[in-house]
Length: 88
Image (cartoon, rainbow, N blue to C red; front, side):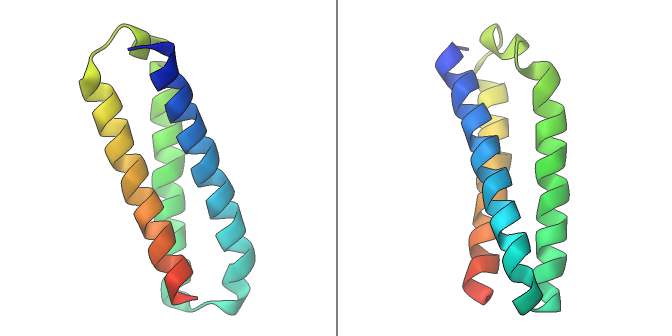
């Protein structure tokens, strides 16, 4: 896996963390349902980050499957954040 893919995943995780933090600040105005969804997505993001750290260096040697799986989870989290933002 090229270093650029590793950088893309790091950037994706950083962007998702930033969006999570922004939504957390807006949640005091939000609904309980949105809070629950944000909490679920936050746990999923933390899990993604935890799983990615040990793979970071190994990704340069592994195939596209790892990249595809991480990107899929990242996209799911991002879509969830957008649903929450729309509900606020």
